[in-house]
Image (cartoon, rainbow, N blue to C red):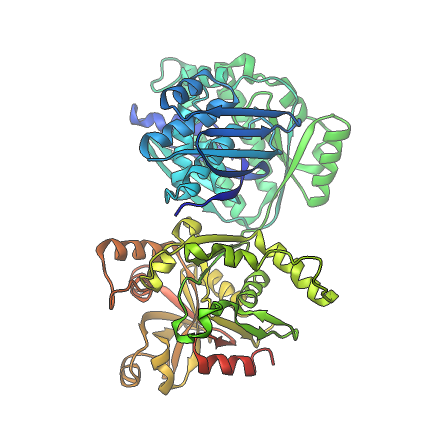
Length: 635
């Protein structure tokens, strides 16, 4: 589904460990004795902010970190784009990605305004990959190409390969945009997986304000591949192979444990190995005098656990693991004020298991007709616990925000986007709101930045609706709430938080459930399972049946003699895979693609759990239920 205008942000990437192993690992397609490459990559807080829209040509304006404005325009000629890409320079990356995507997709032009750039260039933070990803993502979302994040990453990589840069696949990790990812490079095969971080970790990286030539470094190191001809070549193969694999493995464990001290020691070890085995092949560029002065500065030692070079190494940038947030600030002050370096902080937070949520709201609401002829049921008013009348959707969004959700996808009909956006638009100054009500205006404004839309242009069932959020999920587990249900907890934590906490135990498809009377099972999805030993709220699920008969549920479903119905869901990537398979095979029930068969497939495969939610679900999708919700919710 095409979009008219979009906002974009792509960060830089900081290679924590494993630089150069990406292109080295790719050489396995020529020499099978080469050990696959591996790296750990974090996304920075600095990056490129842009807006993009469809255009008749390819246009780009960018504002550099120094405040300079650069302009580029091309009539979208394939031959001309390839020529510009091959000539080098900042706009070669834009042309390269556009040339690559236009080879495989029937697209037109785009106009990108990179109105803010906080990412330093040519300092090992991959500003080139960030602009490549911006261009790939703009084409994908504006023209509805349905590329996943991996797909955008591939387009950015292949586009950069058309330029003089020819960097490896590691750089495009910036497409993931958060946290730390593990990357493995085996010939043309790339595996990417998120890394769990066990505690907040505080980094500082600084531009050394010196010269380095990445092209020369890559040329010199590439001379050792794919086959060794000298002892120096064998040393580099060992460094980027066995030694690198060992350090990356230990670093992943340190990240998982939240062990900053261990991570710092590994950085120091990695730098020593790099100097010993890589520097001889490019002695001028990799001598990196300024880098080593910074790493050996005795004034810095009291604030850090360790440090190393960044990216292709050389005198580009340096990174440190600070001992605490206060030490991070002390280090920043010293680097800026005493050493006169441009520097940045990066705090990698303890991993949130669930960052994203999905709310399907594309249905017609026919059971609430004729009210839904004028207003979508998600906008029906309900008085919340604070005594204010709110649209149901805002109550659901508050549930998610209070559970720590960062990104929310609303699955809507394409023609309804402006309607949903109107919820987040500020009222004119003519509206006189009390201070309490003004708070809701600020609340809505802050939520707006978390909202993404996915589009269901045909009403083909609940499973089909959820499948439209596949690109948004991008391989992460997501919290799924219905657009016509609101929740009230009896616990200190809200209902969504209770489900997320359960998922942290199960690391599998997890469904929130609540007890229902036997005669009411015909209104719900009802589960079958057994309580996990030693747990009074956690159930190992065997199956789920949608709206069973009372007799069937009594004979075949239930947990420990009671009936439990679906409350809310945390969907794992396996659910989306099952939905895709279901859609490809045309497996429908009464002409619609349902979610329940996908849930059952996962439950019988990798497994699924239910957790008893200490709270109540209120329905606004039926007139009788809405009447009950208005009467009882928030009291």
